[in-house]
Image (cartoon, rainbow, N blue to C red; front, side):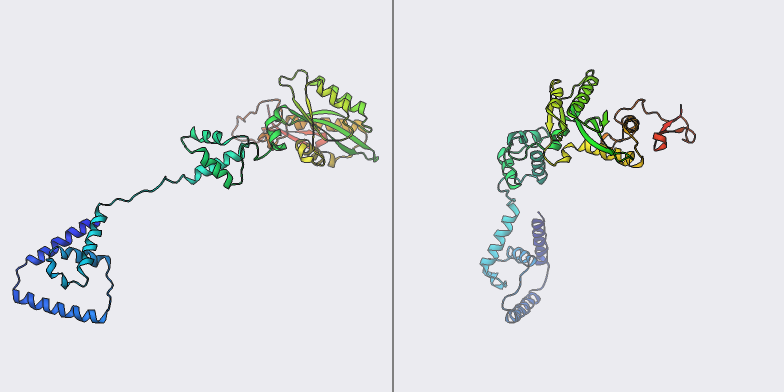
Length: 357
């Protein structure tokens, strides 16, 4: 449209100049001078550079002169006709789109993300999920994207690992483990504990200097008695390959329809929740106290476990304790001075802060 407008305006200007009243003598003299100057320029420059604006001007001027007088132009008549045809073609020719429109890059990123997060989904399932979001793509295209990203068909991308297994079943998984405590008399005591993976609640068992198979099995029976009234029963028990966990220990849980899952060799991260509790109880309690005997160890750990379950905030639970005895209250006064009380546990080793009644 812009070229057409300029071309039309230039034609009007030239017509206006041509219709001006001028004497024939002055016009002939001016034409003679211009022809001579043009001959001089042609001798100096073998091939002049013609810009698009020059082409536009010469093409418009050619419409006002007869073809017999086109020899006055610096280009040949065939060139003028070619320029004119190109100008008309540019006026009436629209840009053509060839092939399909390219798919947005974010759609490909979404398809690869769905394949990585859902290794059991096939190509059509991956296509159907974005379709609910108003995004259409073919299964063949998704297959090509996945191959370029190094991902194969469903079932071959990635097997279920321990992290995904525990995340899915954590509300129905119970873990068990041992840790040791050395007394001031250099006696080594073995502490057995159970912990829920979903709520991080610790079920206290006991400690002993000689963890025999009969003693460990008896602790398992006592735990199953306390879990009899649980609304949602446990389905899995995670334990390591310690020889203290015998077949009779596993039979106690199998009788309750709890499947015993043993961790791989030398893989403590497979029972990471229990290992994290051992680190916590050592760093916050046992490393700061001198243990005298099994009774002292049991009373100390009993107090810490109660603090761990009812008050201590957990990062895995959005800084909430596994089981809070009272709902969280907000202070009525604008200032907290005098409204927060401190409760000491384990002789002042552990502090708990609550709002005053």
